[in-house]
Amino acid sequence: MLPTFVIGLREGLEAALIVGIIASFLGQQGRRDALRKVWLGVGIAVAICVAVAIGLQVFSSELPGKQQEQLETVVGGVAIVMVSYMVLWMRRHSRDLKKDLEGAAGRALSEGSSTALVLMAFLAVLREGFETSVFLLATFNASTNKWYGGTGAALGILIAAVVGYGIYKGGVRINLSRFFRITGVVLIIVAAGLVSTAIMTAYEGGWIATNNPDLDLTWLVRPNTPLASVLTGVLGIQQFESWKMVIGWLVYAVPMLALVLWPNRRKKAAAQRPAPEPVNAG
Image 1 (cartoon, rainbow, N blue to C red):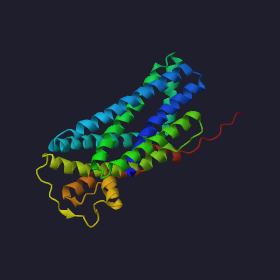
Image 2 (image 1 turned 120 degrees about the vertical axis):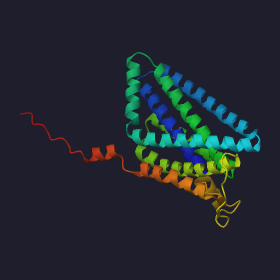
Image 3 (image 1 turned 60 degrees about the vertical axis):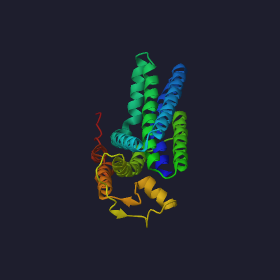
Image 4 (image 1 turned 180 degrees about the horizontal axis):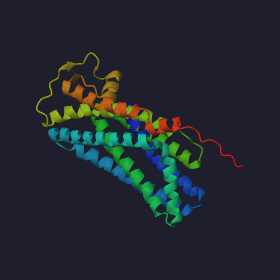
């Protein structure tokens, strides 16, 4: 439940931030006509994402066993690439996100067109929704309890929508850098579990010749227990682990965590820059 909750919250909030900032800007400018188009574009994007998620799930469930494992490997790989790019991009741009969006919105309106803003909101929701669909599908495939996973994702998206509405109304302020750093750490751990799971499904799909169960962890990952759900769903730890899966987990997690947790150079430089000396008028 925790991985899907964080995925839903993180991805949902990224889209909600963009839409909320654009909607708030249009409201301040009195452009209710453009605001209605933004909500329409968001609704269409959400509908497309839901259709993609359902289509992926139906297509996956109807495949034969070996091909299903191969598809799960591909989906897991795509999800890992997406979450890695998303975490690193947001680490770099989260501080200036609001300022950049409002600047782009101001330029669009000054040129007499609101279409760019509507398209920006539509593409933001479409992109984040598609990423969410792929990432959740990969996480569901690695999870032992689909119902808990679905509930966590729904709660995360709901909270993200509420926060986005609060941003639109101007009553919610959050530290974006801190939020995205914390959730980034959680998502990297989840993605490392997907790396381990992708190695296992690649073997079961016939793409890896050997994947010997070198480690017997049944003493820790006991079937049908809450601890097993957490270890498998969050960390990707299986009852029987191979050294390939362990090495894959470490090779991905260690450098990614180092990148996310390492102090931002721009932030550090700004903090160390001396304040300008006052200028005497006379």
